[in-house]
Length: 398
Ligand code: NAD
Ligand code: MG
Image (cartoon, rainbow, N blue to C red; front, top):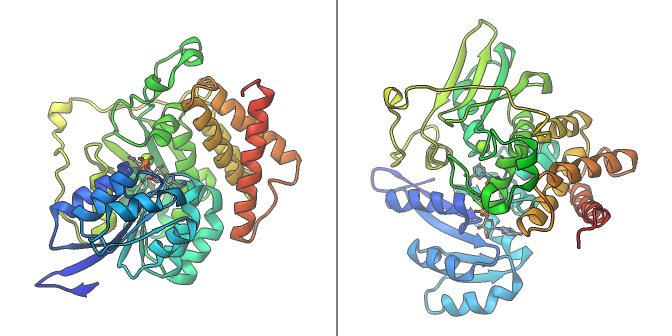
């Protein structure tokens, strides 16, 4: 960070700037104009949204992943001096620009390559993109160590764990328990779940998020992905990871210690709090997050996840235990199934069913092999997407 007037100015790039996390990040940037300077912003195809953000935050570079968006972006930003580029290589270039912190908030495995590019620069990465840790956890963390990168979790549960662990020794940690809201279908029976529509699944009770993670919350695959994410971020084994349903989303994670002590982090459900910490750690900065009033809330409740209605956590645990490329298969199959559900091509309960079919097929084939290079993960990701599409066809889905 370079020195500013009495305070350091942090140069920030945001991958996935037009999304929910990207916009929450830029909301914080707008509230702290003396603290942040925007370097590169990226989006998938929303050229108009990207151009607006780039102008508002005086970005130095704007990149659209879809090559067809180049002309429109160049037109929208002509005369501004903002460097414009498009395509996959340009995403990597954006991620590699000199910056103090890169916010990795692209959704899905598409975020893996650009996020790794940021890691390789050795700069702080504020990681929202959980899919890259799910798909490539071990290899990703190896790169983080090799580059001596500071990896700060943005996911609220992992930010909470990070805070509750502090400087504690690994040997003192007994368990990490992630909380899950239970999503919009927490109390729905099997028949209702079978008929659930995307617009119902998209109505999350507590959080406002992008479409993919909102569906993941409804199936509870989000918690499964987060267990895998936690395995890579924290010094624990699979058996030390657990989750509990907590419909109010106030307690975000609990860390249990060998002496019987449990440390939890609480906050109103607003992603600006964990994003702010990832940007400012070890300091803290102001956010507009609604302050907690426990007396007003009255009660916080907890219950066990129902594995019968929501099998996704079990599937994620199985993939985590299998290791190798199995989590990459889980992730890719889930991305394909979620997209098919959002497009009304499959039912809600078909999402975990397709993932399960893919894991079964992959484990009996060569797909769930050990992997020791990122290119192998990318190949598995592609193959698992193909497999998932063939599973959809088997179900008669066009
Ligand atoms: P979103 O859908 O709102 O935004 C995704 C961003 O990624 C957009 O800017 C989009 O343009 C970009 N993008 C999408 N596909 C792309 C591709 N193929 N190539 C390049 N860019 C692409 O998603 P979100 O809710 O902001 O979530 C982003 C990530 O953060 C996800 O991995 C999600 O699991 C994680 N996360 C989100 C929240 C939340 O509250 N939204 C909380 C925790 C973790
Ligand atoms: Mg989360």
